[in-house]
Picture 1 (cartoon, helix red, strand yellow):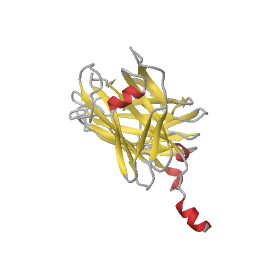
Picture 2 (tube, rainbow, N blue to C red; picture 1 turned 90 degrees about the horizontal axis):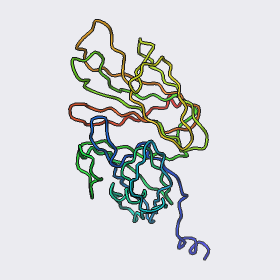
Picture 3 (cartoon, rainbow, N blue to C red; picture 1 turned 180 degrees about the vertical axis):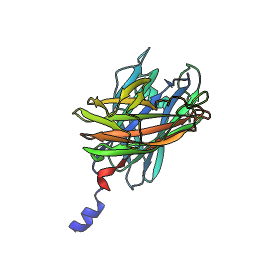
Length: 275
């Protein structure tokens, strides 16, 4: 009898927190474009899984007319199925935000796979589109906060930049950091195969290695570019690797953008201490 009773009892999977390391709602890009994220929730289990917003790690948040205090909004993902959390729905759930750029924390009461699709949907300052987003973009997977790497050395491989272009650079690269923890994390950037001892970060020339601190519950994204070489012109785009040394758990990503098509590629880090 005890075995039968145990078999009839519902099975509960341990709750977990996830971090979507880059998240946008009607966020303006450098070229005036607008970007938003829609979130796909996939439940492979035989039990429904509630998923709620646990918090926002902001880089930028604008609310001209807030529609109420932030409250944890929940979506229930039925067994062995998927739910789309639209950008317009997320806008309302985050207090009627006009513009958001940062990272999103989610709480799941079970095993769920979460993917964000970051889409370039318009070139005006209008509101976030309703329904499924249409446009070029890139996908990014949420990570379990309990499984974030660090302390360790990470490699962001096969990034792209364009040194000494004739005209506009063909590619641009950004690197991002989300710290959902309670302690600051120090980040040190190295270029292992680069002769130059400097790098351009957010337009400024800075010496290498470059160090920064990601404070708790914050998100940071940096644009990285090479220094041009004197007396050289019309070089081709180059692939490069970026080493990221972190002294604590951190979500790290790279993003490469084709400047002609505005197609993006999300780059996942490789943990060098696991090899």
